[in-house]
Image (cartoon, rainbow, N blue to C red; front, side):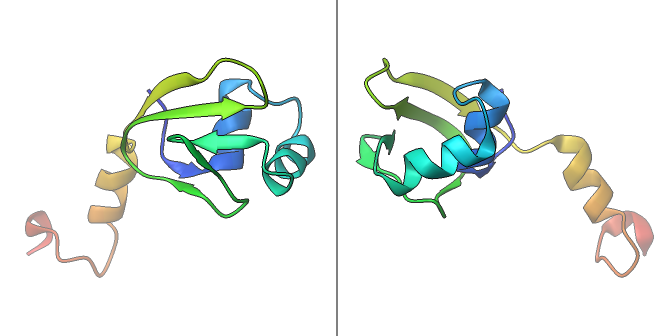
Length: 86
């Protein structure tokens, strides 16, 4: 499973691209498809199962889920309305 975020970051984390600049170039040229639609450089990956295809390579299906520890950290931060802090 991978954390949701910007598509170019996800592609780098998965090893689909060799560099961030390569990923941005591919996105700008329309060579990346996200859930069977041409992706743009600002595409955000939400939670769930999604397919990503770079160029003519076979599409891969990945599952994205937010990091639980990250959510807990935000919920317990000062000023939050988390029930444990009342």
